[in-house]
Image (cartoon, rainbow, N blue to C red):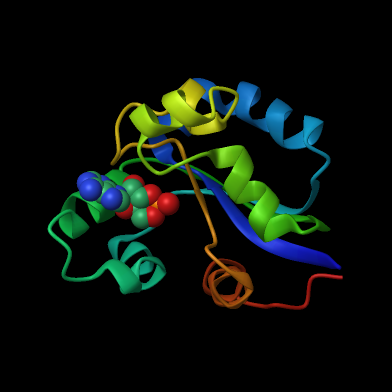
Length: 140
Ligand code: CMP
């Protein structure tokens, strides 16, 4: 079935690799249903990553997500959530290089923290993240 996912190019990669990453998004057949470029506030980033609160890297994560504008998109296609996760590759770019050399993280991530892109982990998170960022879930 056709579905939506929340995809985000993190500040560091948005600055250096936006065009290359956007090209891979289009080549993979995603429709870009919504897009905006915006720096997350600490409040937004904390809400966005609330499932990771308490982890040792949480503060660094919020800092790295707020240090400049991100490209934030709703991507739409059949199986969008899983297909975007495949295109991103594993969280850790070393793993990504080893297992999925064509993935975005293999090609553009710096390290496990500044790992170029984010994507919803499942359909439920996709809906709540889209609402968190775009303030609505009525896309079509
Ligand atoms: P993302 O897919 O956006 O979801 C959670 C983020 O936390 C992840 O990408 C990384 O940016 C970060 N992250 C996950 N694991 C680690 C780790 N072990 N060390 C530092 N950052 C991490």
